[in-house]
Amino acid sequence: MTSTLNDEIASSWFISFAECLQHGDVAGTTSLFLPNGWLRDFLAFNWDLRTLHGHEKISSYLSEHLPTSKFYGFELASDQYFKPSAGVMPGTVNAGFTFSTPIANGRGYCTLTSTTEIDDMTGWKASTVFMTLDSLNGYEEDGAAEDIYDGRCPTWGEARDMKWRKAEQEPEVLIIGAGQNGLQVAARLRQMKIPTLVVEKNDRVGDTWRRRYPTLALHTPKTHHSLLYQPFPSNWPVWTPRDKLADWLEQYVFSQDLLVWTKSRVMPAPTYNRSSKEWTVTVDKAGKIFTLHPKHVIVATGMLGEPYVPTIEDQGIFEGQIMHSEGFSGGADFTGKRVIVVGTGNSGADIALDLSTHNARSVTMMQRSSTCVQPASIIAEQHLQVYPTDVPIEVSDFRAFALPTLRLFEILAETRGMSWDREKDLIEGLREAGMKVDMGPHGAGILPLVYLRFGGFWMDVGCGKKIISREIKVKSGVEIQKFTKNSMIFSDGSEIEADVVIFATGYRNMSQTLKNLLSDEIIHETHSLPYGLDEEGEYEAGYRPTGHPGLWFAPGSFNNSRLQSKYLGIQLQAANIGYLKL
Image 1 (cartoon, helix red, strand yellow):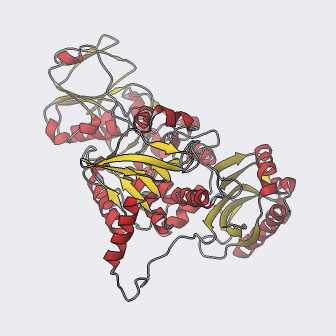
Image 2 (cartoon, rainbow, N blue to C red):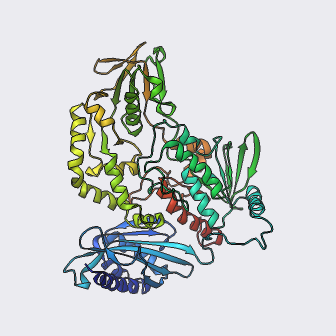
Image 3 (cartoon, rainbow, N blue to C red):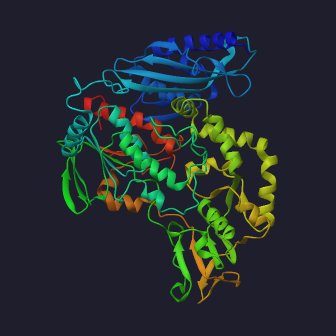
């Protein structure tokens, strides 16, 4: 389709959409969607993050919220990245747009699909519409600082230190955890002029990554895991190694002027005063006790609890070495050893590959349940379609979130066959070697498992080839029964001798960790906890009200906190102004 036709299609649909919303026409608005269309709303209609699928749910949602919503100033985008253009799928058109409300500026994105002839303007319907608040009037994000110091007196450093001293004494927001999510949220809040303090239990920012196994590299390309406001240099590795990421996070604190206390732990348990709408939080900073009274506490401690190591009969008599994958120091330490790796997720596969590469005497992977396996190259291609190297990260983020998560799962399932020719040798070879390999939820592959379970998969970078060649062995379909002095015995009566057993068995549920941190009483008041999707495909408690006033969670991957920190910040501003009642 020509650019002129794309403009005509988008304009015709968009004029009708804007008129229906401005007149509060629920039926008319709903009719502009496909019967199985999607509406994703981040704060535009309601102070929440919601996704509605199908006419019935869209109509019900609009009936509840459209009468109290006021929209005006609708304009189609004309810039390079959001102007009407042909979509990825044949017979589709994408377009960005802006709008206003009495209190905010908004942005949106739609994908239109033809239901009749392409040149029939009335036959185009929305398969997806994404509407968001972009900023509250008068509370927009700061841009790059100019010469704001009146003759540079005080100096930049003096001005920063004054802000930090005030934030240390009276932080409006306390973020627990200085990983990628906590830091990106802190960077966003700084630009939104919200005084924020981050506390991190480790000695250095990035230590959580430094403790992971040494061959670890992120399995998504760098455009996907770039940091907010600070993309990686052009010569940065495509697959970011563990230590480079750790060091980048540490310097991100300095380059983004973030106030972070390391060697600092929140002491159990914080309390909340509903009259003053403030927390009382005690922090042990390297042995010195501080009491803080923030309005908001954001938990950004990740989605994983403590390392999980199952209790096995006679484990105490085993004369070899037993460890969790978190303590694995690298394959070079186990040359000539007989090693059993329990678990066939990403960590187990990477560790087994490292052990085999460094000439362990034998490597056996013990598979507890079926695993979804795909070549890392295919996952990279999927990510690069969404996060291409020649498009600004913030543009790719907005486009990516314009596609509802559950719709993404559908598309992955529908298009899986396109990559099957490049996957089948790996998957069939693993099955012939004795592994139980599945195709992921509804055949959609690995990515849904990243959202739904944060486990049960591996992105293959070479372990599969060694299993197929039998350089790495697989034991599947049995349970561990017990240890002997120098072996592991399984439920089928078989026995494997070992010098080392590495449990790549994941981590405990965050529930108990959060209860220990915040108390049973506080957790009981939350709607849910931040590790899983709700029925609409949104994180149950991520970047949205939790049910407990002043308590927020920042879960997910790099792209979640990179974009959704904006919507979290807007909600904090709205709560402080009085727009949002918590």
